[in-house]
Length: 202
Image (cartoon, rainbow, N blue to C red):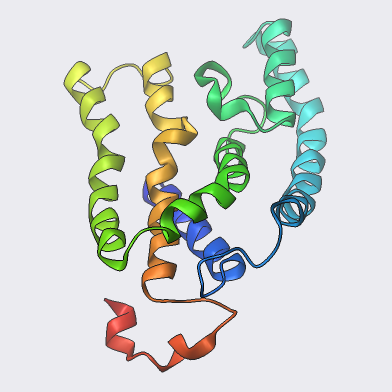
């Protein structure tokens, strides 16, 4: 399960780079057009699912007392605006899996600047970054385990902070972007098809 979350973020970075970064390292469209396309593709479905989940969540809370009305409203607003992953107490509210969508929404927002940072590196720097990012991504987990050797309480503040905060997952997203850049994999230039299968596999 958790491995698939990591893979989701890596693939997200890879696909966006494949679709929107030209071989010269610049974006293939303006920031505004990119953001409009992302919102149009993701947000209507997100809101539709949230509206379907709202009656269920309300009934469950009403009968179980699992949350206060204030928390229900705040969680709903954060989920509707895709900000829930930034608030550990509400990261899993209403529609739990969408915390990952909340993180990806942030990556969409930051993507034009991430592209500039990644593509501004030399090829050697990109390889070094790709090697360092897995270590960086694991650092918060190691710090958490140092503080809570027994694993801590599930759903506690620090547990959810390490598990859900978008900034702590950004190394995975950047790994996908770097993989696309290092192998020059782009829909704008298909010469990468000529690379040997072994090279692409490694």
